[in-house]
Amino acid sequence: GDVYKRQVWSVAVHPDGKRLASGGADGTVRLWDTSTHQSIQSWKVHEMPVTVVAWSPDGKLLATGGGDRTIRVLDGQTGREKLRLENHSGAVTCLAFDPTGKYLVSGGADRRLVLWELATGKPQRMRERYGSVITGMAFVQEGAVLVSAGGDQLVRLWNVPGLEEIRVLTGHRQVITALAANAAGDMVASADS
Image (cartoon, rainbow, N blue to C red):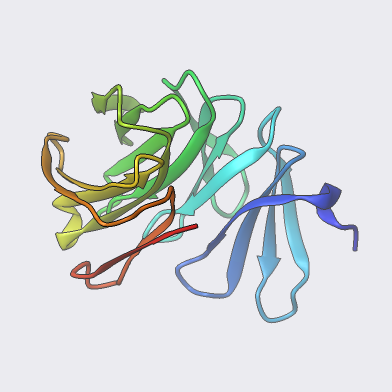
């Protein structure tokens, strides 16, 4: 097939492992079959690059963030937009669903961290003036704690849903470019460049 307009900006594996979502520079989200490596669906979602994609824990929803400063929550089967979330003044750089699927958290180039309540589509809590661009997030401890990382070289832990900072971890000497938690939520890994 085509080279997907030459740039893929983000990927996320569906919880069942059979599909992969990718976000491209052309504002398109594509679903891929992981066994055949073929594109099975394509949806034009954003007017600018799709900077991040994330599946809900049950795989029914796909959240996308874009350079257009918006978040779209899509039906994971049809691509139909269920919610459009707008609160960032810069590109959306990371997204994570909590384990229950009640919340979606977003981080952006605007240094804003937003906890969205999916039932209402409204921000539940927001933290502005984060130390830098937010580059990664993950929920741990069954969703009671959010872990975030960014360009300020720090890993931060926040309680949920209050978003009060409960701990800051140091040790990186460069921008943190990746953050992941294990399925049990008791271990977090962060990486820098």
